[in-house]
Length: 148
Image (cartoon, rainbow, N blue to C red; front, side, top):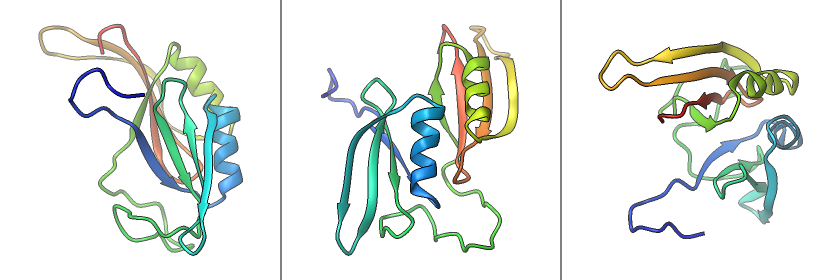
């Protein structure tokens, strides 16, 4: 699907899975994504899949044996999760509480329970937000707002 303007349009976020099947299950069964396209490239990408959020925007999952461009070095097995350039990614939802509960039931860890966030600037903007940590250390925000 091509954007209607020449401005760049968001397409996907890529994640390296420590357990590919668990990660795909989390996003499909837990968050409602659909597997759009699976692929592998011998010698470079062991397993990969584009998971569709339902609007032509994707989370791309790579198997742990894949060699792909990354923001930083690969985390060692015994290292704690570290913060890199990607702080979080956000999913627009119709119901923050429901999305948060569904993610927790699928194995996510809570970072910030649902709450209302209000800007202090004019114009006033309200959003219902929550944050979880996914199966590979990725931080996911759920956003419900009429204004954003």
